[in-house]
Length: 215
Image 1: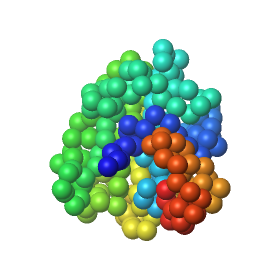
Image 2: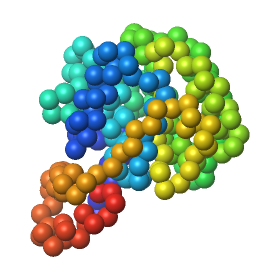
Image 3: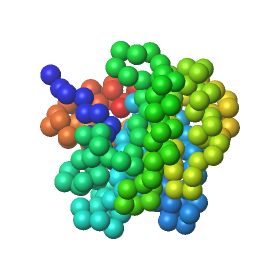
């Protein structure tokens, strides 16, 4: 039996190095959009990418900061630990609750309370909306106001499965980045995941699994 490692727990980022460098440059030059939409098939690593970039933002110029050379998070990093424990004052996660089929309007109202609060230490606020296709009509409409008037240092990262749909009103307020993997990248990610779990399957098994859309 294997435990599936959730995106927020993954310490290494595989095959999105170019995307990561582009996001870092946008942030450093003040060009990072306040509302970013990451689209692509579910399981592609979009949430893992965001958690790594968020760690970079929160831990920049601090002890145990994000390792840009190896695209990895230090497990002793305080921002990483706070997000694990759901105690980071500048980070808000909006997702469907366990066993719920959609994201409720009450969760969006709680988000608005978070947005009104002052930031702690570094003046950056992050809102991560995972599985945005699960926003219902009411929660989508409630979210629009926050997306229309973001403060300068508040950044929304909205993740959705492009095989499904999200309201056009939300898409129109974001800059979309489409994530995908070619065959080489899928092999690279899959081999790294095998190494993480200390597995050594034969090439026939690997060739079979990389035919899937996501690793």
